[in-house]
Image (cartoon, rainbow, N blue to C red; front, top):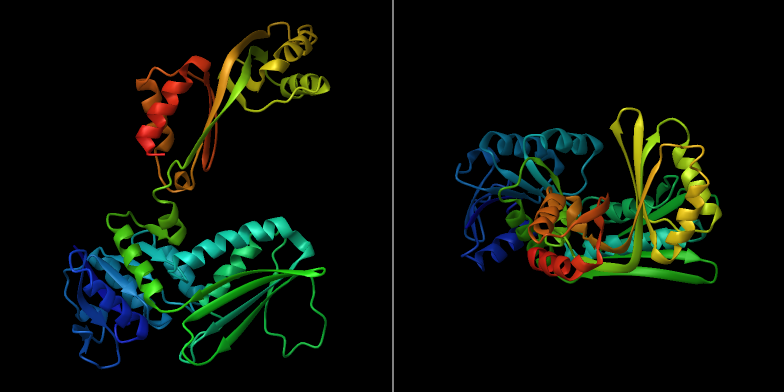
Length: 407
């Protein structure tokens, strides 16, 4: 059972989180609330005026309050060894810098929006901005109830940041245009706020192009979606080391390896005993490119003694052409040793969870070793591992990988 302290317990979000936690007594126990309003209880939970007055026995603080309470909350979490789930919006730059500093000693989960749908919207916006480019002009409109204090919403800024991350030159955020007497420039992301009634939260992002508009829209019908996300974050933070975490981490946590695919009819060429500093890389790949050979994976190592080893993969039907091209380099690199393998399959595994989980490559290599799968060549990125293995090992490799990582 996860023991919670709710900061901002008398607000709308605080009450919603308490009610939802009470509906799952086997998973959560709210031991206390915190709110300076002077009310002694919220949804049947005792409320203290400051977080230092609440009982010591807790696991996670969930904070949906005001930025002014952040220093005290962080200090309490540091002293007591608590994790913090922070949903408070309207943070200033100084608050964000404080979060970064304190994350060295406190596990902090911070998101301007706890909704899974909004975080999916963020990923869609990144793809849209990258695909549409500078020819489309992004504008964001957000709507909230008349009690919301900060403007623009934290979510609107998250959406703007997601779009901005896809442009080579950072764009300017323009908050409304009532004070401007000039045309919209290409270097803008417009952000507009509407307040009224009981609107829980709506965020519409539109990309305006020539004769068309592309829109990506999210609407929350109740605060329940945010409370669900906050409790999910609290569960996620149990046992976490100090650091900054967000909704993307939750979304990708179980997707350590989510896809696996193979490419048959590959080959590998390995070159060894190449003298370093003689333009070997440019000469070798220049000669191969001149013969219209497509190279895929490349590995370069320098074992010592002034020599380098180079390995690369290519389509098997281009192996002979590549080897013939390399013959012309033997005079320039007389000690070059050439070895080729033509019974190769490229096996690729990928998943967004690799970016936040340590030891995935080690785990992958271990299961392949136990299955006697020989790895001939490896390249990696933040979310992908590509391997060249023998054709005869493919079935065995697929079986052990899918079993180990539940793909």
